[in-house]
Length: 54
Image 1 (cartoon, rainbow, N blue to C red):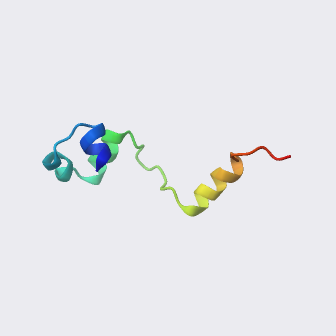
Image 2 (image 1 turned 90 degrees about the vertical axis):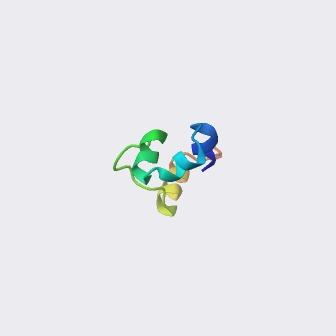
Image 3 (image 1 turned 90 degrees about the horizontal axis):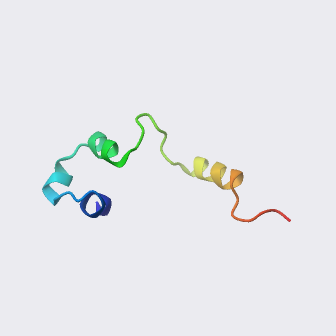
């Protein structure tokens, strides 16, 4: 909601009248992109660790 109202500059009535697909399009979310799950987050953390081993 913060992104819609402040980031995109929408009025509350405009924000609440959007469909999820319209909001995703305005936010630049690719159609068919997978949701971030715990498993995907764990895979990303393993692939790109905050600290280098050793």
